Length: 179
Image 1 (tube, one colour):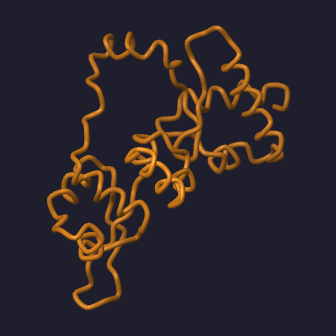
Image 2 (cartoon, helix red, strand yellow; image 1 turned 120 degrees about the horizontal axis):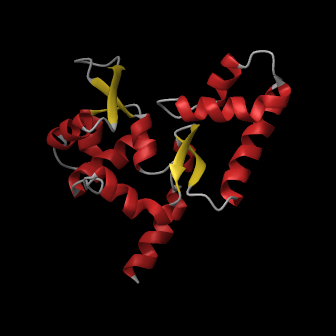
């Protein structure tokens, strides 16, 4: 198996419906040392990046997927008749930001952060599957708790929530924008 490890991982990424996580790879490749799997993945990512082909392997939502290189995006979209990502309203973006940075969070907490009612934006984000309900808070009324989904990570091109800009970065961006 070791001599075909890269090809095995390549086929698993190719056939996987969702981003193929290192955990899922370990589950399938039980007899292969973790560092060998990690090295094979990095070799594959590097080989696709260095090739002149139109395909690459990217890391998103904690796993790996095949993707076309950015310069071919307009043609792929035309072929598949894909519209641009539906834009989120200002209210939805504010609500999504409150959830991403404070999760798990309740509707009253979101509304307090935004200083306005967030019910409509919350429903919109649930429909788009960018957030999900993860339970109830142990508080009076037992309000629902919300958190972001893997689709949120994919939508914004993040590998994990750790990739979100930090508060200092956001302040600096806001200062630059206002200048």
